[in-house]
Image 1 (cartoon, rainbow, N blue to C red):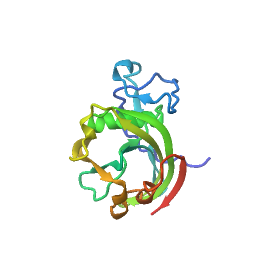
Image 2 (image 1 turned 60 degrees about the vertical axis):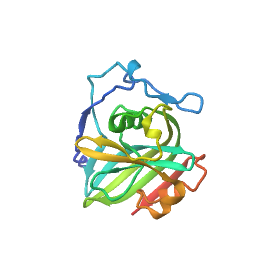
Image 3 (image 1 turned 45 degrees about the vertical axis):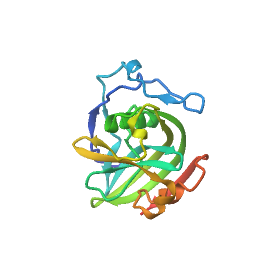
Image 4 (image 1 turned 120 degrees about the vertical axis):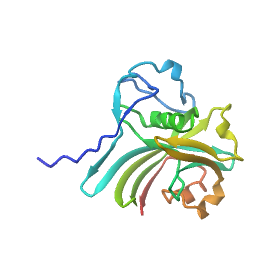
Length: 205
């Protein structure tokens, strides 16, 4: 029997809960997923783990992210201490749909309610971060911010947090990304497309 990977459990309470266990959501242009904490009351005591583990000399992550575009601008975020920008999102938790992850992360990190549209990109991302080799599967969804959110202000940087670290959320012109350190690197060219078709990308840094 092959040796099982050394699973690193990153445990967190699922707050707020998104759906009862076993419930399935569908997403299309007519029925977008909406963050509605008042209706998400089931299973709030369940403990979930982030899908992230070490195997061999790699760390595997399953990540979901939001592609939020406002006119010619796209929303990115950066963790304090990092020198690069990325799409907002985070690691998927067990028993959680990837679209739910995006809704949860935006609420937890910056207090924003969003609506999820269709999936636009599947990424196999191979990179080194802080000396660790990473193999990450990324699921990127189109999303829109609820109209009363202060996060829609294009002119200012918005502060958020991820656990004990600060985050900066900011809007950038899509044409400017080619001159920025945005990761995964394919995003520098990705936003020059019309963002209407699902694409599959293999990013090897």
